[in-house]
Figure 1: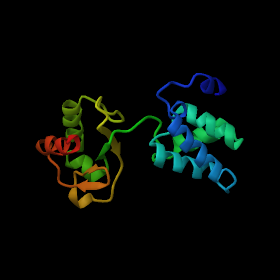
Figure 2 (figure 1 turned 90 degrees about the horizontal axis):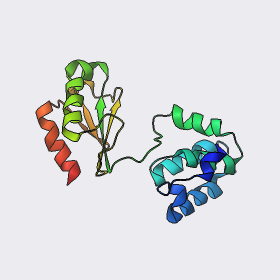
Figure 3 (figure 1 turned 180 degrees about the vertical axis):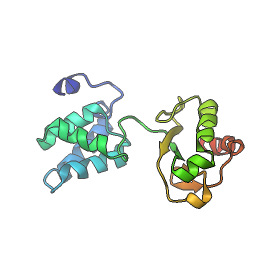
Figure 4 (figure 1 turned 90 degrees about the vertical axis):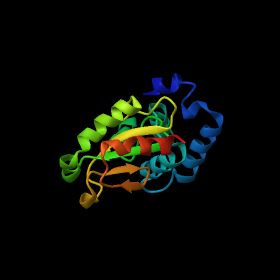
Length: 168
């Protein structure tokens, strides 16, 4: 993984001076705390927006833990992402009620309208599409979450309106 640190892409947060300062600040403030790996990763996700492979290696190096430990945390918790997200995140609930209520059709309509697959971000960087498990709004199925806002009883013909609001 050290090889990753020798070839950091120019677009990676570690290669961008302003973001590198934030990363180093987070590491300096939290390196001695119990559970520092989780604390640092949470802060990085919150402030940088994602955790790249070079960032994983850098965190491991600075905290003196194996890269596998850092990667294990990043890959285990769905909160962490390893690539930049869009300005808005649209999540399609695939819990039982939403699935039965038509979530697969909503996802297909979104694929066609946005030209991306779940887990991808539109070229303009505005929308990331994700699939998630139950969001706890089963009575409103099918449910789509836009950022932190729940939209219930969504039909395919309502999606273009949701996408337009995100693109404004």
